[in-house]
Amino acid sequence: MSEITKKIKKTVQKHNMLQKGDFVVVGVSGGADSMLLLKFLKDIQKKLDLRILAANVEHGIRGEESLSDSLFVENYCKQNGIEFQCLRIDAPSLAKEAGKGIEEYSREKRYEFFESFSPDKIATAHNLSDNVETVLFRLSRGTSLSGCCGIPKVRGKIIRPLIELTSVEIRQECKSASIPYVIDSTNSDNSYSRNYIRNVVIPDFSKLNPSFEKTFQRFISSAAEDSDFLESQAEICFDACFSENALDIKKLKEYHISVVKRAIILLAEKNSISLDELHLNGIFDLLSKRGKFQIKNNIYAISDLKTLRISEIDNSYVKFSFIEEVIDVKDFLNKCELLKKEFNFYCDCDKISGSISVRQRIEGDFIVPEKRNCTKSLKKLFNELKIPSDKRNKIPIIADDIGVIGVSSYCTDERVRIDEKTKRVLLIRITED
Image (tube, rainbow, N blue to C red; front, side):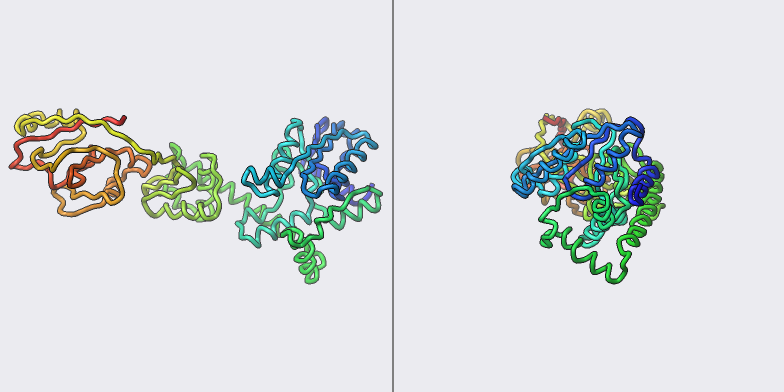
């Protein structure tokens, strides 16, 4: 048994990647990495009583070369008694139709294909060099600590037995063990970001440190350990602060910012939303102010300074129906408490200008709250009343020909308030259509 094979076995055992009797789907492109992985699994198949299926995806990107690679994998599997399945797609065209990048679309389709066989495990040939490239790529674009953790060795049923081997070690093992493989001609095209990192950036780092990839792995492992600890602290924080689909802001502020942000991410995940850095910071800012922050479409993070929650805000038009009734002020005063329960709004009937309408709030609406000697926009009034942002469009606004005269159940404008000169009172009962 070669040293490389021993190293792969050690990785598999250390991370408990395989169990006896597993059905393993192996992603095989024909490159050195996937061919070494397939050979390793074939060699231990009898000992672990594994069922192995080699799954190849031909993406329709490299024309005849890509078709030839698939045929190479198929022939190898036939010669070695390995189950084989191939999926052929036109990734460039289909990705464009789906509004996605070719790489993203291809990755989704690969894993969908692997999952379609309902395996116990999905083995992919990601290696240490891939891991280093991934982290350097993320760092070049800007990333968080979790982005520095690289490619996980195990994620659910996905296992990566070669994750601790460099690409150089893999090619050397293929040569010494006479394992055939194909070479993707696009690997030398440095216009692709990953190829540039692989062919230019990493070799330059290796001039500074010949063991760059393996020492960089220590950074990745350290980042993963720290991230794992912070994630566990975030779960504790989340459990302590979460209630009724919202986070308690006062409690949340007792924790470190790194834990708080992770708790916010957990809140988003609970609402089936993933956050990028821009949206995470926008939501974090709501911890110190009342308001809302749009995440996507009509989904918002909402703060009332007591709780932070994620909710759908219905911005559609709301139509109201209403019934008017006019009574003598003496009758009103005699039945005041009863009438307040029965009607949503009342005012001095004779101070109204023109006709009454009941509608949603609109931009520029303002009111002079009775007996307060000040003018407020409805936005400021709602903030003052601590009305959640997602509820505001459904609050009826009462207006006459001059402007707003009241906010249903909350406020009456000074212009139409009932005073000692009032003779008739207008009562309004409002319903939402």
